Image (cartoon, rainbow, N blue to C red; front, side, top):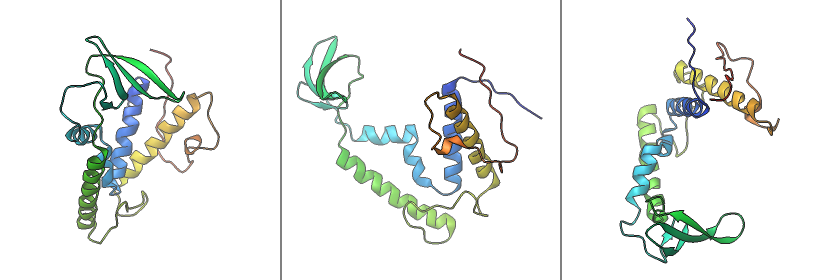
Length: 188
């Protein structure tokens, strides 16, 4: 049976991300849990100061130089040296998190995930260690997900007029069985 799924570019990229997450967890790269947007957001918000914005505060968009009811101005560097930019005062400008405390908690979680890896695998595993995608203990569905990712990545690579031939996205290995097919149905 063949099934056709029509989706936009962002949905296809989300499918690619989900498949990547699935295949990585399947090879015991449990540290990938920290890159899940919900988990990352929970963790970041735990270390964000809970106070009203004031002139002089450090934000994710630079240091606040002026606040009105409608706008917030921040000074920061955006590739052209220091400059001041104006943002809508609608809650989008957020205080910077305490990065030291954030990374400390992230490291603590990674150590716990390493312990969990060792318990699951039954052998001691070091931090950032995982099984290879072709390890015989890895479920076949993880390899299938990995293969699907390669086809999707290659599709997006082919759509890029400024693509480089020297990237992993450039090739889809001929050994992939049951390769998925992707077509461009044009713009929405």
